[in-house]
Length: 221
Image 1: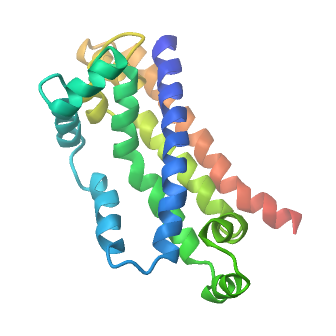
Image 2 (image 1 turned 180 degrees about the horizontal axis):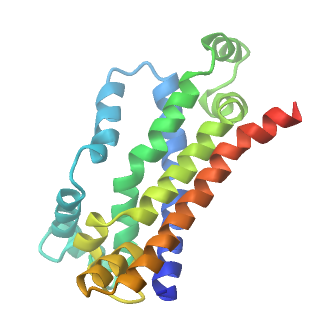
C-alpha cells in the first residue's frame, strides 16, 4: 500500500468536498429561490462535467493554468509556481470535475421544500440567507450529506483529470488512482489488488454512512 498516496488522496477529497459545499449551498439556494431566466444555463454549465470526458477537462485546465496563458502566468506570479502539476491545481480540477455531484443533490433537496413554507418566510420578512439557513438546509439535511459524500467519493476515484493536470509526482499529485494505474502497467497484480481493495473500502464505508442514516432515524421514530 502506498500510504503517502492514500493520505494525499484523502486530503484532496476532503479539501475538494469542503470547497464544493461552500459553492454548492448558495448556488443551489439561488436556483431554488431566484426567478432568474439564466437558471437553466447555470445548471447546464454546472452539470457539464457529467458528460464531458475528464481528459478533455484536464487538458483545458492544463492549458489554462500553464505558463503559456495570461491567467496561468498571473497565478504563477502570485503563488510563486504554476498551478499545473501541483496539489493546488489538483484541487481546482477536482472541484470543477466533481461539482455536479455536490450541486445536483442540493438542488433536488431544496426543490422538495414546499413553496408554501418559503412564501410564508418571505411574508415574515426573511431574506434568502435566513431562508437557506433556517428552512432549506434543515429540511434537506440528507441532501447535504449526499452532496458531501458523493463529491468526496468522486474525487477519491477520479483519474483522467488528475493524470492530465497533475501527472504522477509522489507526495504532490500522485493519488491512489494513479498508483493503481502504475501497478497494473507494471503487472504488479498483488499491489494492484491491495490498492483496489482500499478504494473499494473507502467507497463502501462512505455509502454505508449515507444509507444507514435514514434507517437509524426510522428506528428512533
